[in-house]
Image 1 (cartoon, rainbow, N blue to C red):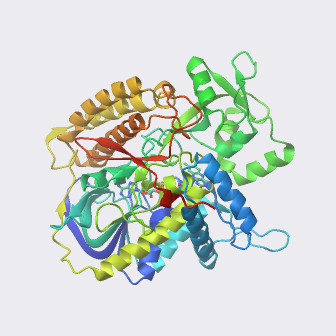
Image 2: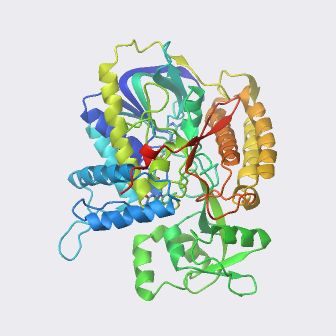
Length: 534
Ligand SMILES: Cc1cc2nc3c(=O)[nH]c(=O)nc-3n(C[C@H](O)[C@H](O)[C@H](O)COP(=O)(O)OP(=O)(O)OC[C@H]3O[C@@H](n4cnc5c(N)ncnc54)[C@H](O)[C@@H]3O)c2cc1C
């Protein structure tokens, strides 16, 4: 990395897409297909960054002629999402994914076929998927800035988003893109838990948007923990459907038939002492298939000489936050528009409550959502840009916290300390799985202090700029999460309140939130119109 700061790189575009994962790449390809000039900026290298690039991904792909299968799948999702998913949204996602995913085959992705020769679209190999998506993005004329995280949005005099500013890490150069519309598709927030692929997912998009006045929704559904071996970071929920769990003395752990249903029991057991796991429900055929389909799952086990199908290994939960949660920026229409004009959102940066409700976890709908919300946001952003007559180069930066020109200089160690303080509030199962009003209030007072520690501090060196801003985003996301979780006075889906443990939740409600210095949350009824039933 060069240490000298260079002159700002300034670009004009119709649409700026922030992110480099599936949601961003589908959005960019779609916007370019509508005739828009598109710039895509990624914190990492587009095509290898983000959680999809590390994973084998199942996809919610059910052709419309398999109506019965669709209905069963939607019913399952509706139940799993604690009755919050919206039937119309589920149908739209299935339809859009069905329409768009086959384009990948045209782009050279080799989907397998079944014995009758029918193409199987339900599974994607993440690395190859994203490699193809990068090629598609470039082929469609989009300009990519790799290793160039966005740091703050630009907003014009009418309050509309008109671009963003960021930093090119390898060039040590600021960038500014003036654009008539911006799509935030930069993933969710996993609070730097170390889970595979998630360290770029620090909630930057949530912070940037909230600083520009956008609202969030469902941030209480941000406490998903994935299963992993102690010392390992590969989180593969599917493999643990074959698991049995044990106490240290070898006696079986009761009450955990699977990790969706047994999540609370597992958290309680992990608080009490070590838990061990063995994937002893996998027969030989499954074992053989797993080695082919999920090769990276076995790397750590092989290195340590553990056969996970035969040997017990120490088990833990790793926070995956909103990535396999459902909270994010609030959508106001079918186009993935946010509450701020000119700002669109896709993938895990968006609230997925309408699709996945109160429980996402593993599955296939996230991948389908990335494709469909990417497509809708890209199309809408391009159309917004084509109707926009406002001058573009007039936007003012709206970032508030931990920016290079933002306040008293602080060394990287200062921001690292704040990150650790936030993690101490969001990682522990006793705080974030077994939630209580008093526990969350106590966390919020620590987080308020953390916010003061980043609010008016600036990174003292170029190299610290990205982490400083990520730190502010982690603090902000934790504050929205707990403020929303206090407002939801019930247990629903992944949100469990020890002080409201009833398995019969109350009326259907949405918790919206926002604010950066003053964080707020409000409960709204889910309107009947949103609940179009089957
Ligand atoms: C291990 C694992 C397995 C999974 N398996 C499945 C599955 O089988 N099926 C399924 O449906 N879902 C699965 N998921 C979830 C799924 O991967 C995500 O929902 C999906 O990848 C979301 O896509 P995205 O583009 O929104 O985010 P991501 O894929 O996380 O991409 C985010 C992108 O934004 C970039 N970025 C971040 N901050 C900035 C910034 N400030 N500026 C610019 N760029 C930025 C990142 O570098 C990255 O490129 C899995 C998740 C994990 C972690």
